[in-house]
Image: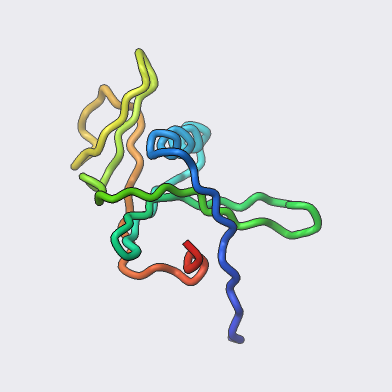
Length: 119
């Protein structure tokens, strides 16, 4: 196998964690698996998800990392979400509360991958 140079993903920083959860939860509802990645860089906690924008102009695809930065680490391995009767989310230790139809796994990385080195 030959060495392949991986270029960093294009970064898209969004306003807050609620927007990230809303994005990932709607991907999940449309039969797309989605996770939120977490890693620490200095004092910042980065949480985000990645996607590919296929056929981006003349490229085969544009790798995109959609993320937020915060000062605190996540408070659980899952994020629970519901939009009815009102939008509500929180951290969870498990997927047991049936009042929340969507649970998003939060995966903490041991090492930042090369394609996220620009975060």
